[in-house]
Image (cartoon, rainbow, N blue to C red; front, top):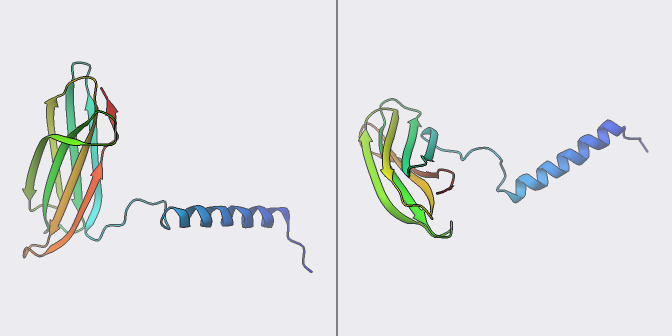
Length: 139
């Protein structure tokens, strides 16, 4: 019977832990895998006066794509059930589309951005729909 070195044992244990954790989380710790979307992000910052700066950006893999981007500012009393209080949208035939908007919000709530992007080819054929959220902010 062959002996396994300490380094070999450590590698085997780490590999088993990572494989098990990865399987429990759908197989990957990476960002969501998109077909046509290269990157997709949404951010929210709220100033002391209650001005919410809402930003979302989506980049596609093809410069001839058309992207429809919708950004919703959402409010919650418990951080779990969300109501849209303001939304914006844009459609552009560029592979980089962003929305940068602002809105005053009331104190005593949780807030987040929900952004949804739909990507179409230059001939108008739908390719992909994806959504992303900002971090939740308590104001």
